[in-house]
Length: 368
Image 1: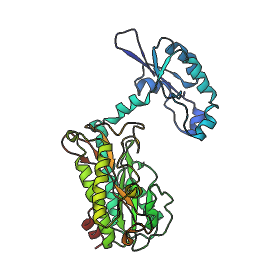
Image 2: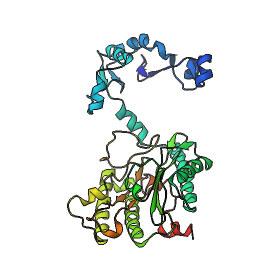
Image 3: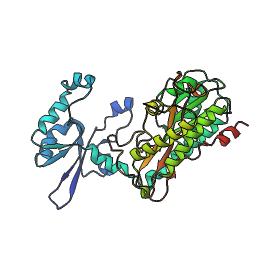
């Protein structure tokens, strides 16, 4: 926590941490301790987190405003949340009592602004993760796979082998009909020739993530309908990535609208009836989200604001065709998504995951 000192425009940084405890650390691993709070994290004042209650009243007493998300500012919306909202942990009740005279403001919007614009060092970490992960995807596409779990294991291993610290999230490895489930994570089915496989995965490096999705044929060659649908999505993705630059003044919501228009035109040309809610059925998710320290970074940040240099986003159009009579027979049951991590710059986008091939000719050449 930070608080104003008596000096003009100066602040005191207080950091309360768990104290060193050799017996506990033998079981749970090392703790930084209070001395490291001063020496490593540059705190002005420190103390044992177990003693924070007796310090907090004094620290918050003179504050006109307290920024925290520890005390919910809005009532819970889901039935599950409401069920437990009246059963606050004792420490949270104590915090509410200490701060009852203060004006409470949410901390998340401020943190979102700080996290949203990446420094050159942060972008370098994300580029490292994208490069290592993209190469893992291309290596995977060179090989023949018979099960989702084997492909899943290969990707996660190769992310690390190529220089990532770990996986950024639980991968989606979905073959055939499973590809229509956007967040399918069972990854335990058999892969069949004639189907495509959708792999949504990425590595993490220095706490920063990359988010990549590629779709390719299990057999190594697309069927003509698969190629047509894939190229419609790829053309949409190319268009939207090209507009991820500050001087285009686009927001993620605007890019989503462009993706919808482009996909609708392409699908009409392929013989789809796009009347009614057809587009929402075939393309049910947003085109992209913010990324950084987390896969869905800066939660709650508006997608209506124009993109700014240093922001990093995903661009991930996808189509998921139900296996019903409403849709052209050649495309029924298909699920295809293509996703890259992109850093917004002033005049052009920086694709962080470019090493993962995605052109039809390039994918097929890997197994030729």
